[in-house]
Length: 143
Image (cartoon, rainbow, N blue to C red; front, top):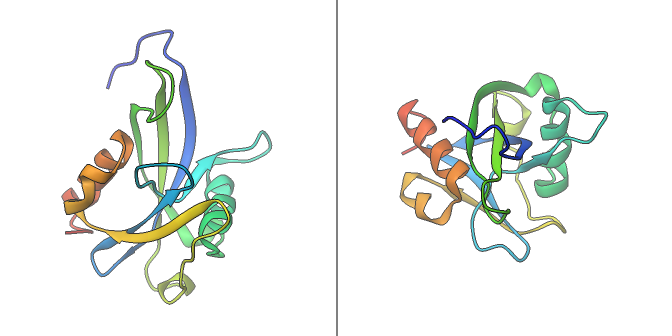
């Protein structure tokens, strides 16, 4: 996707935890859509450090940089932001066979609920989530 030269872009990191052909998503407080666990990096953080921290804050999942691999970067219009604002979301896929295979994600103080979703749920997602679900479906990871 081509961006206007003056379009503000939010850089975020997001976690892809896939189980039973579904991906983990959360519904943040006061929001009407499902998001991937994740968020903006703090000034001192790399993208992978941000996803590790955000995943813990939002779902209680304890992971390390060694538990994930970069999957893709999705750039789409940012939901709930000023018109023209874009989001560049680096997606980190949890490696199967690790300690997170049996961990139970829980809603934290930042999110109201956690859900396991498939491509049938794409209408409940913002543009970056819709594109992520498309990529996961194309890769044969979710239904």
